[in-house]
Amino acid sequence: MMAHPGRVAALVEADGLVHIYKKDDLEVVALQGLDLRLEEGELIAVVGRSGSGKTTLLNVLAALEAPSAGRLMVAGRDLTRLIPSEREAYRRDTVGYMWQHSQRNLWPPLNSLENVQVPMLATAAEPSREERARGLLDALGLGHRLKHRPVQLSGGERQRLALAVALANQPRLLLVDEPTSELDTESSEDLMRDVAALLMDLRVGTIMVTHDPALGRHVDRVVQIRDGRTSTETRYIERDRGLVADELTIVDRFGRLQIPLHLLEELGLDSLVRIQRDGDGLRISPARGRRGRE
Image 1: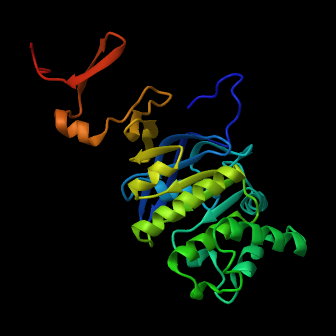
Image 2 (image 1 turned 135 degrees about the vertical axis):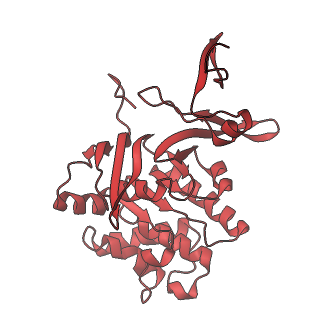
Image 3 (image 1 turned 180 degrees about the vertical axis):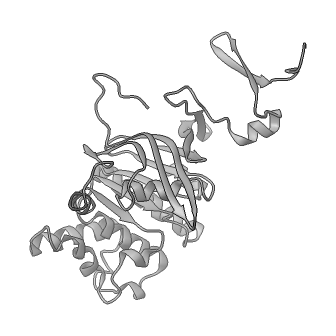
């Protein structure tokens, strides 16, 4: 993803992002030159198999882990160059994180209204803290649960409360890890419908990691990660028969692309393929007969 002269900077711009971490005596390359762009107020879902790099991407964007190489800009900050004090300020002022398990966002002894005010203790006066907390809880359907502690809430209500906590400091970037993993289908659908409406109203740029394919219908686009790189992008388009998925393959700045696995298997493509121009497009076919003459 190269910078273009005159192009307005996005909220998130990842260019050739690499992250390597150590596990026992091994070095694991979790992100292998990942490119990603997120506009202000855009909501995207990131999907991929376990080990594809999804959670690592969230942790790097949250400044919980530092990139090993590449370029990563968030809201004008270069996350490859942050010193410890800048990382703390970034996590306090710029980014909100909703963890997969809601209890990580919540303080069990406090009620809902108090929970949402905790992230604002160092940045806002008491009257404005309570006003904002009430507004978020009302918007997420918890206006009648202000005095309830997390243990008194249902699973779906705890997820809504965790989201309100993540949004309390008015972040420009919201990171969400598997928001519906602990919910049934009906609760997941209700949560995502309300969340999408709220985020659109707040204009918060959001990256959501998920295994739930149904969530794709509530976001602007779905980005798939494979082997530490973005591989495909899907948008749902309104048609006469309802929403239709339009899947596109991402080509990086070096001209590399990842062919969807199901097509590799169906067409019998292996390590070598033949690419030929075909009118206004390209034809990719197995490189049969590559030994000697065809």
